[in-house]
Length: 418
Image 1 (spheres, rainbow, N blue to C red):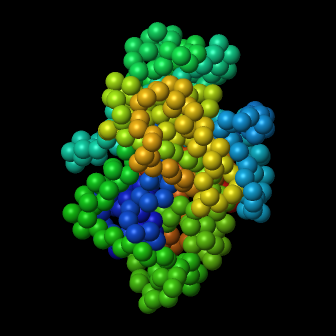
Image 2 (cartoon, rainbow, N blue to C red):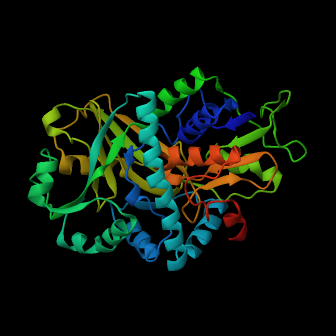
């Protein structure tokens, strides 16, 4: 089939790869000047399937309120709050019910474990070399945090995740550079999880897709799809329509605008995150792989000769305005655990990205209900962890094959019924 993909983030690139590898004629349109320029650009890079869970969870509303009152809280509201954000929060609260949470958690983790397997298969088959390292350590600063994390460990056990509870001494043997000046009660070690450079992988896979015949067109802002000819694409600035047999929408936040004329109301909203990336000053003072500060929900990742610190979740505000308080928290957590690891006087990359999130958690995969229009969107903060599996599932569906995992609850009908 002749297939168009709208969006060249990690979701669009992996989808292009899977479809062109299946023998389809693939053309990708991206509004930015290169692949992986938005939410895929400078994220934490952590691939930890057991920790892929919905935001919408029992007790989450209380956690959000406590976080709002904390100086270094992980979740913040910023002004202005749009009507879209308010509608999203209303649907999010409804999805916090236990039964809904358990179903959505199962869906996300099923896809996440499958995606990690697919990531490894692609990496091995194509002999891709990118910044990555094995292991993930969740740091617990106090006995109280050790107690609070126990329900989460039950989730990991149910998911079949390989992990160990370790004391502070063992945690420092796993990550020798951890500061002894910061209180550490213990940690959760996940040896099968990893950190990997999302954007590097996306660029490498784009080149592999191009070698098989996929075409990528950048600086192409696609106009909203037409109800009369939904599989014909034209530029927002005006251009002749190009016809395709199918269109896959992977355009992140822009997906809602593209799909609205087709009668599809996709409740996406941006949840902003920040990161800083800095060159390693002394390798012995830097992490070996990735750690997560459980209290502040901040990840510190080793990416080659750089350290990346990523965290915060902000609803409202704008992409163009950095939040100094969020950046301050990232610097604080890096200093707490790995003082002297990075060169912070110059050359630090500060980044803010918009995660395209649905209120209940899981992405939407598969047929849209409009002939020829397919969806692969709404992955939120788990886009990197879910990308390779989502792309393989979508390619199987487009090709009329039964995917390897159960897709119950991942279709667009979930949103239409909510």
